[in-house]
Amino acid sequence: MNRGPFMLLALCGAAILTAVWPAGPARGIERNFAGSAQLDYLYVPTDPTARRFSFDGFTTELSLKLAVDFSQHASANVKVCYGCHGVEAGMAYFDFRVMDELNFRVGRFIPSFGDFPLRHDPANHRTSDKPLAYDMGRMLRLREWGMSVLPAPYVDNGVEINGTHWFGDDVQLDFALYAVAGLKGSVDGADVDFLQSRSGALYYIDNNSQPAVGGRLALTANFGSISSLTLGLSGMHGTYDANRDLLYTIAGADATFRVDRFNLRAEALIRRTEMSLGANPGERFRYGPGDDGAYDPFFLKDAFYVETDFPLLRWLEVVGRFDGMHRLGNVVSSSPLRKESLILRSTLGANVVFERSFRLKLSGELWDFSDFEDAVAVHLGLVGAF
Amino acid sequence: MTRAAMLVIALGLALGACSSAHHVTRPDGIDVSSYPDEIQDAYDVFAFRCSRCHSLARPLNAQVTDPEHWDDYVARMRRQPGSGINRHNARQVLKFLYYYTQQRTGAGGGT
Image 1: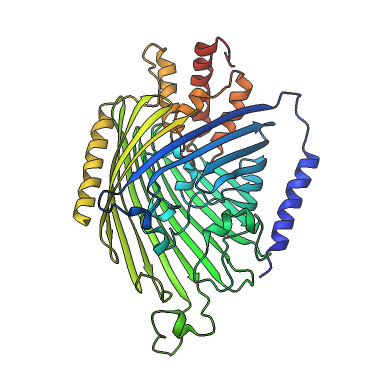
Image 2: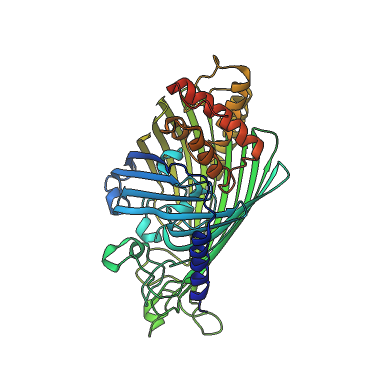
């Protein structure tokens, strides 16, 4: 399917809107600069050689963001991030809003998928690491598992049309549809390769000239002025190899319940990914063909989390999280995983807020692996926001 | 392991309910006890809505002194997916931000 015309149409729409935009009263362009930095130390007391299967020790994440409001109809956001991959453009996009229900987003941005990416800055999270569904490089056994379902932040180039509509004062409906370059991987891949999306050596371009498409629909209900419930559904579909042969489809559902200072968040994601069978699947894969004599080229990876956080004292917040990840399907011969593998993780943490902009994040995690020794991990992080 | 996880979540729910009931001040917020009652009410709306996606430190530290800038800023935030900020909430948020800015800088009286 050729999705190029959709991209072209959306870009043309945004360009025409800009050209015919009614000039408002003269006013200054308003800028706001914000950012955050987080230093985290990961310690795995159950294994003195944890470096073999994790990025333990110190990691730093930095984000610097400039938001520019040209008017209530046009704005721009540019965000530069520094992390394990070096310096990256985390955002570089324009918003052209015709009305609340119709906004054109053009550039490099985080496509609307799920609830967790809405809080894309480490300063906005109560733990130093992310839920397994969105983890990018901080999980134990990251290489064996090929990381998460959709490593966050997932930043991509493209066009998004989104909007929000209120039904009365208490019900908000959000939608988003987008076409982006999509996830990347090799033509002989057995999974998407997130490193290829973050490698300047491979260029920050669409590797197969075919955009991936996706969307999100979410409903928020307010119960009074200080409680709300959001329910959302997200989906994304594309091919990740240069030959446009290998498919991936990601679906997600999320719920966020908030009452005053208390937050309860839950989310579930599933990715169906096609593997290249190669010339000799009998050698390439550990498990043989099915009853019909054919190799199943797809595997499923799904993950969930339930997380709650609230302030216990004026200077102390607590966070509890239970999450897991599951993989079902054939594996390449060299993989330590089996046809069905599972991780369950329980996390208990605290944030000490010693000044409004600074917090110390401490969390302990119990990892329960189906294919490896169980492990304990401890995170100690310091984050500052400005 | 599953039992332990369920215990953690159940404990979280119980403690969270207790903390909400006792109105523990938000660690990243400000003390508004000396503000007028209507501004304290507006602050409650601001603190709840504006902590949905980010720390309160972000708007409280923002280098915004012009009321028109706050108007655009809050308009952009109101349209964020899942913000839950309706037009009435937006007016409440702006009422607090105008007052807070005035207190902090002597500017931003608003309309």
